[in-house]
Length: 294
Image 1 (cartoon, rainbow, N blue to C red):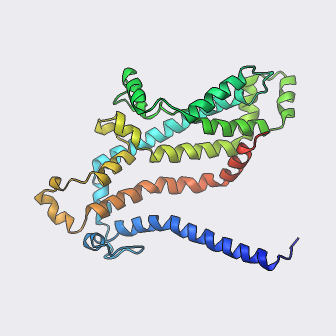
Image 2 (cartoon, rainbow, N blue to C red):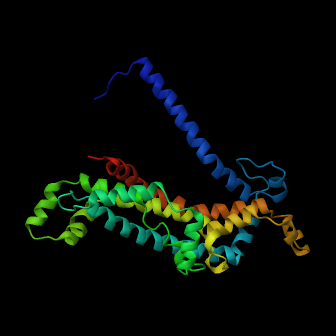
């Protein structure tokens, strides 16, 4: 049914629409600027003449990216890390959220565990104790140091727990009357009905892991274990002019550090830009239902 809106309501809708359009443009502008820099001639990019449209169109930066072996080595480390971390993190989150979604008469220590998890979500041991713990466990320069720390995200577990608690209890009771145990209820009832929230935390894990660079800066020195974002951070932040040789001078006429870094960032963004629309349709449902607390 179409409702007649007042002038004030229509004016509010117009202002809200304009604000959302401006926010969207501000969000997309850095991506377009990066793409424009990566496709522009080095001298024009370094002169600051490129904003949202490439000038002196060239693919020289991308040729350099595809010739960089360390870039693809780090790319593979990031893909492997993202896949393994997301898989284990979703599994651990579900196994943590399912018992916490039970009533206290079914899981008497539930509230104690909840207080502990909320406490560790708000406080941690700090960088130095964490570093010493990682070192004592022998995880320095080990691939699993990129996976195990932070594997269980309490915020995601609370989202999944609340989603489980919002499912009809009659389903659980009926399955129990038919003789189904906890594992069968989880696998055959809860997980198939929880696709939105599982897709949401999967997206959180993929994006978070893909963009994470700090842990490798602290715990990894081997080049074959450096993730892509850490490699990009080193490329973009730690530019050393003394490493430029005479052989590089001719290349710098067509490719600069700025255009090369932009090309690498553009290639890095591509997988997330592909994955996000596929999972976005579950995003609102997963967040909304998972954040509702009885």
